[in-house]
Length: 576
Image 1 (cartoon, helix red, strand yellow):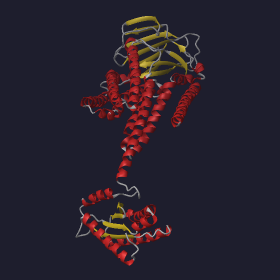
Image 2 (cartoon, rainbow, N blue to C red; image 1 turned 135 degrees about the vertical axis):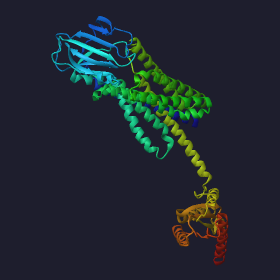
Image 3 (cartoon, helix red, strand yellow; image 1 turned 180 degrees about the vertical axis):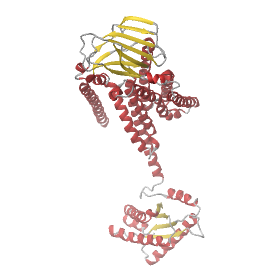
Image 4 (cartoon, one colour; image 1 turned 90 degrees about the vertical axis):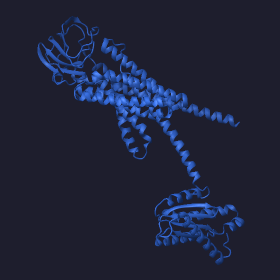
């Protein structure tokens, strides 16, 4: 009957948990749809543009093509110093007011002419200084009379193997351009902002928490990883263009965050690597971490002094990141096979998802850059994989921390039980002995030992029962703790014997404690009628002639025994 009831209770709890999960998923789904609807409600109106993808005459160095469509035109990847000239005529019936020509540059400086009149230039001065010009959206302000005129775009390539196809060329209304960019990239905008803000907030909280405990180092790594990925996402999708940031600044931030991202991830994995206790795995970990730190420092340093730009070292960093992902997946697979813990299972799932998304994006990037082929209309899914991975990291960290806290709580409970008297909940004899060992190691300890013996305990147990005797023992413990614990430690040595060790040998302070002790006994007898609490005591202090704590304890115990005999003689009924 009881088993049936337990099964029904378990079933109800399972159904309730499932219902809560379904409710949470639906809530997230409909909330996301609502927010997405707010962004895209007027997208059809603001996303109108004039496409300039056809009828181009193109010259790449000495090669010339006429009446080219940018959608299908492919060429050998261009290199630093190559000149590309593109020419076409605007339609004569175009509305000419308040428009912007939007180009997507890829490591190229540009001059834009309208009927041979220069209307915009970008990046040439930086190329002369051997500086990077960056990549991303470049809006060019068109004069109001551009209809029917000839547009000429002259690109000067700043990096080797820059691209092998042209991105769409469009004309937007200025008032709608930035809104259209944000709407088209609303998913990476949301993900990037979320990851960056989440990472910064978590970083600040974790830094404060680490002042009290080093247990949060892994969550610190997650926060730094999140910040890097969030900023990289915002740069990669050119969302930061709305802040009118220069393209070279956005590109630098993109490379910086990408190159720094593996470091916190590798540090996060340190505990999992050490847990395997395999020298070969540890050696590979040290090599990967050292190579990553060295490569990041070297590549960013070369970029800073404009010797070799990050665009040229990107492929090496991408290969290194792939090595990290493969190594991480192997480590977590081994951990999962050994421990079967859900922490490693979640980490492995997140790592596999992330690896798949990153591999997809790398394939997309290389096909697009070197062959001019867009293998899919979907790009940048690495950010989605990264969000899933960070989510898995947080769940893993939460589970890991919960397990460690439970283990620590259990450990602390066992330690406390080993050093605590069960009846009075004060320190026991074992704790007192270890404390005395620490005092013995001091050069000149200024301590006083008080020994106590509870009077009338046997008579109370025989007359009123052991329950009343326990009350008497607890009352004695309360009095001794209240009096002496502020000055040192108090312990029950066993039965009716107690000890207090005060960190002073001042006669005045000792006299004050004895007076307070006797006063607390009188108060306890008033609080509990018929208690008849009486405690014999004796004490001895460390001094110039004697610093041995054991001998001091023996002297105090002898004096306590003398006090007990005196109490017996003055009151024959106060027996042991």
